[in-house]
Length: 268
Image (cartoon, rainbow, N blue to C red; front, top):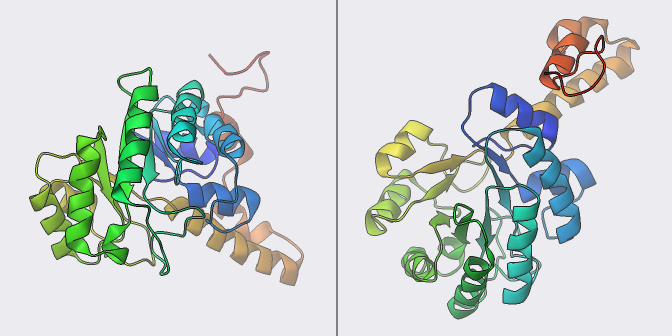
């Protein structure tokens, strides 16, 4: 699941043939609000943006809801809001609020019992049995590898459908985590410039991982390209040299299923 920071990117992900799209909390905060990933967007803001993405594509969309926007009762409200927005699932993490990026130091965790209570509330709240509730644990960097395993098992017992072990630090750790949680669906995070090695989806599948996210890959590439064209535009005063590297108007309209010669939208 590549990450989509907006609905147009989600359409590109779908068109490229991926079976699902991921909506990163960092992507929404960084790209839309221009703020760091430290819980600065409200639940209403996140769900409005995520809803645009989910409704723009036919493939399932998985949302990062950080710490759930509160305790068990607020987590339950978050699940209901996600279902109403058309999302296929979410992942909930065990950090304290305000959270930190999973690949930075200084993280703090809530006690396992508190996370279990939030997960149980999330499971009770969902109305669609196919709505995925994934538990993310940041314990590897805070309490150690063995504690991450223990938390994962407790979270599955609480009703989580899958486990997301954040910031594992080597291929051996990814392999060992899968071995010691055999039978539990696992999600791997292949974010760039973090603590984890960049393993391929094929490698992770061979280890036993069922889902792989690439949260900010399209965003980072597009930002680097935008930075380069803006430097050129400032220096030369024209974008002509970049035309062959741009998506054309016709290509954009095709992506959006829009035909300006016909009345109505979307194009049928």
